[in-house]
Amino acid sequence: MRDKVARIEALSYYAKKFQRLRVDRAHGIAPHKPILLLAVIEQFRREIITENRIYLSSELIQAFLKYWSYLGSPTHNPDISRPFFHMRSGKFWHLWANPSYVKLLSSNGKLRTLAEVKQAVKYAYLDEDLFDFLQSPISRSSLITVLVARWFSGKFELVEEISQTDEFRDPPEYLRDGYEELYN
Image 1 (cartoon, rainbow, N blue to C red):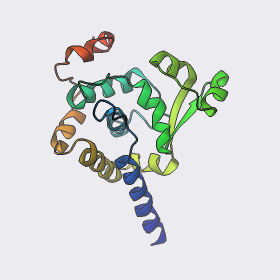
Image 2 (tube, one colour):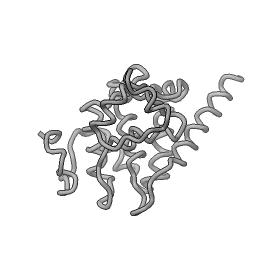
Image 3 (cartoon, one colour):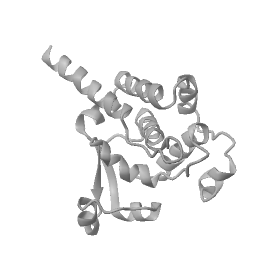
């Protein structure tokens, strides 16, 4: 019984973390972190992520851009590198540095481009409890519900549809710029 209570408390903890993501609000709410989490969760559902290592792979970038094409903001750039790097402020997302970048990451150095993040970060990893929750369809569904309710209110069915397809919504011009190779 104690284990069940502890698991419920832990899931509630991550639900609150997902609700309280620190996002840029300078030009309206920047949905980068919630979209990145939806893309990561989809990779868990599709069993692309099977160990606690989240690589900044072309599959993750494509999933991120797919969600962005439906849910993104026209006043923000669809850049995955910043949320991938800055998600660590949530204290559940951690970065494993490439050998010569350990000092930079531990000193809270700033990485601004996709190339810089790829060069410095080998992969991200999650708290072990969150990793376990994302492997469970029931817990995963609960966390998706929290994300959508907080960041994409009223769009639960749309998010469900997006997760079932590999199709991009006809991407607007701002989304095509710099990402053409991912659409081919």
